Image 1 (spheres, helix red, strand yellow):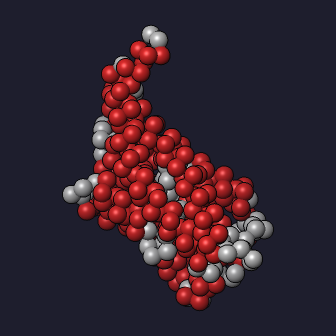
Image 2: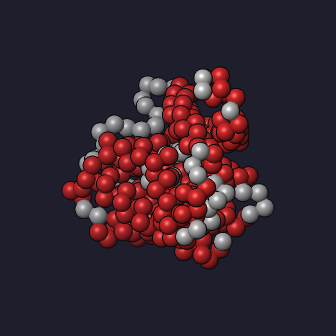
Image 3: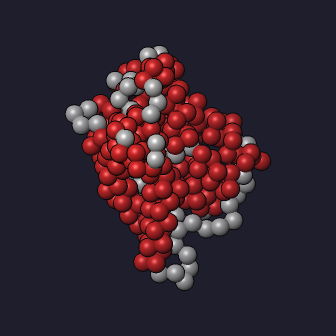
Length: 297
């Protein structure tokens, strides 16, 4: 079959329709999310966090986790921001809780989830609760068992640089985040469309028909696809053959553990930290999603 034949084949047309539909739905939220993230990175000084967080590390962790609801950031921006917070005196446990929560529970992500799952407010609530529980738990786990020798402090400063206008910092931050996240959105939409069109239903059923296998399968898929958090709800909503709990796991794991985040954490904090932290986060996120899904969904 020639190229023209493939382009007019019903299966390719179906794939194209699903891919474009996912991308078109997600792009407005991606733009809004990167606009907000760029503004936070350019306009909010990092020392603000040291003033509002409790001095006791055990109390600072849940406060930093909850701060993600009002101080959003994309996955890529959250890693250097966390490094900046640690350099300014914020306890690493609180900085890591914010690193995980900011891209997962911010208003843009929650609104996008509500749009992707119309008439299902319980999915939004489940995503919020499971993500907050995971970020706080990881902060406390680091506080209890984390080792300073695993952590390599970043040398570069994130956000507004001295001598650079805030408008320039905002423009550059938005441009970087949008182009970077947009590429992963396209790849994620294409992969989701492939699963919906090309993969035999019997293969998907082998995972979808088993409660735990479906959760683990979509959690692993989230790590590989690395879809930005502002758009992952639309990808999850398109995976209609899977249970709500499995799709919840996809949305909880994705903003906290994926291939690009592991690489960013390794480059910022060192490989010893990234591999340990990512592995532990994966386990906690899957567990939180499973429990929350069983309770609410």
